[in-house]
Image (cartoon, rainbow, N blue to C red):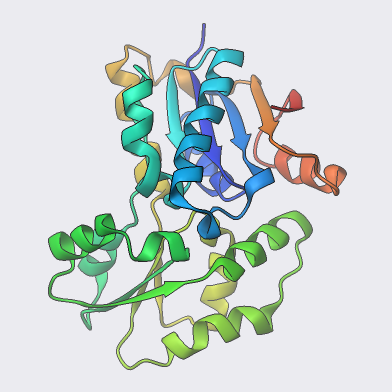
Length: 265
């Protein structure tokens, strides 16, 4: 049996991570679990999210034979990883904001973390900054609106550029800012558009690092990465609520992987 991963997010942001995973191991079978019923996660209470994330992952792992879980959501990763690791005996990979990478690339020692309101002020983020960006000025930009802009852009290809500029410009105008950490997996969906508006700013995300970590764990589990280079068509989609624009959603999903099933969990 091929290795199979569960990839979890509140919306379509996890596809930005999955794209890197598909490039690294196209032979990996996957189940993409999207909790669209409670989207966006950045405005939800912590206790509700922890219980829900654990419960949904348990349901998905019961329905599918899963070898590894990828929590492709920054909010969920900073919040629920300890609870998940208490429940599961399979490897779990979370998303860590690329603060270390941004600090390494910052010439002006001035970076920004662009994330959800639920992520930017967590103690976990404080520790990352202390460990890897202690000599940098770090702006924290929390926006749930930007998550919704990215979701809409992924589904429709249409972007409210004025809204994007309104959210980011007050921070971009700060003297010396030269690196932005895309600390929500939805935001790489907008990276090309952000780069067009602000070409002098470097953008960093965790997608490639997550793919590398996944490959390392698969090797530890005894899987042959060379064999996993042969494309696999075993991909399924799970959602938690009906989608109004189902046709456009499925069309966009098929650009990522050849999904064979689509169900509500």
